Length: 141
Image (cartoon, rainbow, N blue to C red; front, side, top):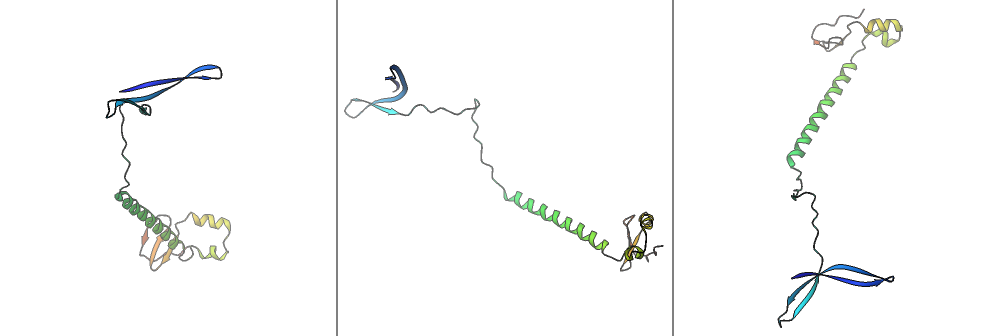
């Protein structure tokens, strides 16, 4: 049987009650009653009326593999995009006069509105439309 005990002590001229202290009584082999101190009742840390045990999340290898594949695809597509942009701009000059510095600022503006064509290896790339054709490149005026 478990029961509580309270201790009364005199502290600073006043009698104070300390406790409760929980004891358990039982009989030993000889039949004598023995009291044993036990720690108090454990308080449950219930937030709700139903206690739910959360399972720790397991990091699946599927998600790691999937994220690696997606990352590689993104890097490859970004690399191809940058590589494509650099190769189209590193071909011959759009207008020879502009690269040599002979054209003025107003001429650059007029020519930027036109459909420029870059010729490289018999393929023609139009900056205005974005199409690549295999015709001979028309000369810039």
